[in-house]
Length: 296
Image 1 (tube, rainbow, N blue to C red):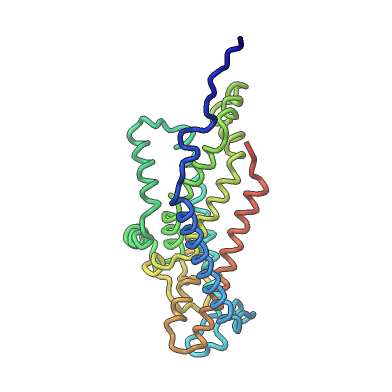
Image 2 (cartoon, one colour):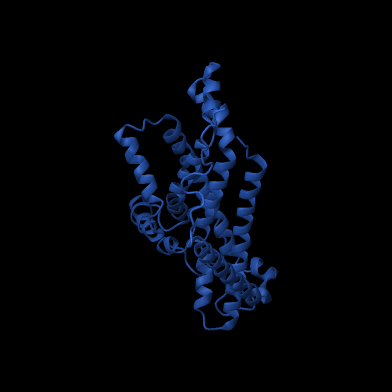
């Protein structure tokens, strides 16, 4: 006589339970996505159609003009934007990556000062940009005597995006498997050699992607730069970091305020240029991620 084993249900306790709200929740999510995409398409279409009449060489070859919109351009704003982003990356990337390496690879999580650093980094990532503008005006521009110059603007935007760079770099370092660290240490490498030659190269794609996305946020900031002397009418390109400057968001805002329709067309064309710069930066981030990303 053969004994039969008791049969167990293959499904868990939640399997088969009806979820009447799940289709409705999916419908709400899909509707939200459709509405957001439609608004984006409408906005981009309006900007491209409105600014198509001035998307020519005059836009990036000529300087701004208050009296002749048909000859006005945005060369000084384009050059100032590129300078600002370049200096911001030069200041914030080394500091952000080194801070992330310390917090992720060397810091003792039980120490109160390390916990305080982590807490402040997470909180500073959500601080409004205008607060950084006030901080830059009071400490960098006036306290350090830098003045309302290109250097003060770059340092302030570096503080703005630094928490994002640190967080993204830590996530990239954390994604590297611990077995790589253990194997390197087992072969006699020091902790610094392990970090510099094994962990950091493997995390470069994630670090680069997060850094470029953080700089993409800085490229559209206008509120901090208004406090730091980004004037609206500059008819020259900055020659050094102590010169006056302007950027595309400020120039666009100045043209939008003008009553003439020609200036509004110029503003739309400048928005297209700003979007193209932003798209180029994001494309580089996607290329770096796809080219160097490793699957663990």
